[in-house]
Each structure stands twice: as structure tokens, then as C-alpha cells.
Length: 269
Image 1 (spheres, rainbow, N blue to C red):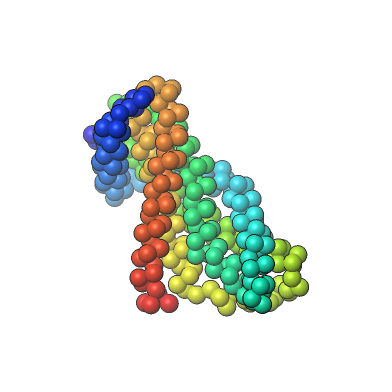
Image 2: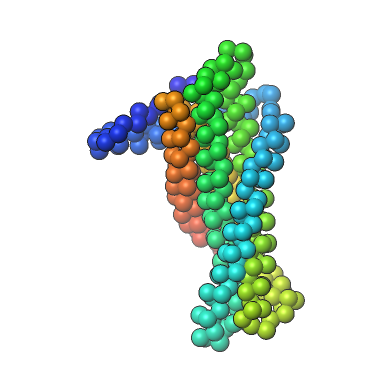
């Protein structure tokens, strides 16, 4: 697989940076095509996929738990004074839950997942590249792309939606705690208001796009790691640029998918 590699130069000119940008786009496109080619060929590394899903889930579980609770807590505290001005505090559960489910939980979980996981994947695979372990796998008749890349990308694609659902639940817990600190609202009323405000068009598209975000995290980290060079300096560079690339792609894709959801809103709702 011939993937263009970018030469990182200090004090690079604008032309070099522009060339590097297009090389990244072309290399990432070729890398994606190779992934889908390898995805539908046997054997499937089931054990490696399970291993990576377990490891990646454990790595991010604690930080997304804290983030989710603070997200719901702060959002409820900030929304209450605004709604109170208009005498609409009864709409606080619906307002908070819709904001969390439709946008905040998916995008923030994906960005934290990218920072924690994409950098780890990039560092791990790049260290294998610069120490020639990947070359050794090729000599040993082992498909390194399928073993190292495909299994990780599948794992990130399917673990992120699970983490997002968990973050939504934790965020609603944090929001309820904030509500009972500011307003005399019962748990039953809060739950009923949240359930009544959520529809198919709110929950399902938000979760479906996290599959795309998970794929982006895995493919960006794997691409930067697999094409790394330059020794130990290249390992650090692959780790940091993987996070930047994954985060940027997540934000761009989210903008596009939100627009698509708005277009499809009449048919979904």
C-alpha cells in the first residue's frame, strides 16, 4: 500500500504547508480505501477487536464520567436563571435533555475520546513503525494493516456510541442534582418531562453519528501512526497530529450531519 508521507520541516513555507495539506487528504483517502478493502477479507480479528474495545472503553470511562456529570450539572445551573426570567422553569428538564442528547453529549464525548484514544493509537502504531516491528510482521507473512488498523478502527467505531449513551445518562443525573438544588422538583416529574420531550428524531440521529465519530477517531490515529517516520520524534508527532486531525474531522463532519438531520427532520419526526 503506497500512502503518501508528509515531510515535516521546521519553518516550512506556505507552499510546503499547502503541499502537506493535500498530501494528508490524499493519503487519508487511500488509507480509507485500503481499510474498506481489508475489512471484507478474511480472517476477521475478533479477539483483537474485543481486546481493543475493552481497553479503549476502560481508558476513557473515568474521564467521560466526570465530564458527563459536570456537563449536566453546569448546563442545568446556567439554564435555570434564563428560564426563570420568563417563568418557564417547568421546561428546564426538556431544555437540558434535548441539548445534551442532540448535540452536547455526542460531540464532547467524541472530542474527549479523540484526545484520549486517537493519540494512544497514533503513538502505539508509530512506535511499531519506527522500530520496524511492522516490517517484521510483513516479512512473517502477517497482514499488519488488518491486525493493527482494522481491529482498532472497528473497536473505536462501536465503543463510542456505548460511551455516548452512558454520558447522556450521567449528564441527566447531574442535571437533576442541579435542579433539586435550585428548584423544588420531584424525580418523577423530572423523568416524565425528559421522556416526554425526547422523540425518535432527537435520540437516534444523535447516536448514529457517534458511529461516524468513532470511525474517525480510529482511522485518524491509525493513519498518523502507520505513516510515521523520523524515529522517536516521529512518534510524538504522530500522537499529537492524530488528535488534531481527528478533532478537526469530527467538528467538520458534525456540522455536515447536523445540516443533513435538519433536512430530514420532517421525515424523521
